Image (tube, rainbow, N blue to C red):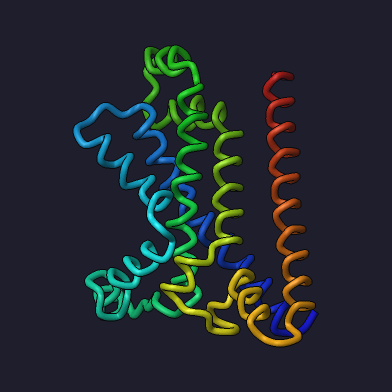
Length: 228
């Protein structure tokens, strides 16, 4: 593999890991709200969370550009106050990947939380435990396989995201050119088929490794739960 191809691989892994890690706490919180919360506007929140699944990725990327671009309301604020620029940067690619993978993460975690017996949570609550402590010691350990599944889904979506990323941060080698963008570039030039095939195989290998690792981890957690 060429140096440019290795750079695309490393950048894709960095972006996917960053997107997954940064969105996981929010994903758990939103999933818990949707699974256990009873509040006005719950349907609106559910719709907003899952909207990226329905919208074309290019539309999502364009909306991110309008909001987080240098002249966007959020992007201008971040630039002027904190000196943070997201548009056409790898951090912007991580944001786009997090937005696209967030619905998959939330759905997996939400289903796992809903499968937890509420009587266990109620029993802990009657013993005087704080709701946050009940969640940390009862709900979260029981729904951990769903959390892992949601994180892996977000990671896999981030590794394969193309439309929103290329719209929001373009296709800049060494800065925002991820695996899908690099493959797209290679198939557009004569003689690029070999490089595109190498990156495709790397992408498949990374995805299979992530899925195998998540399955192995989920089994270990399940076996430990049965043993205890």
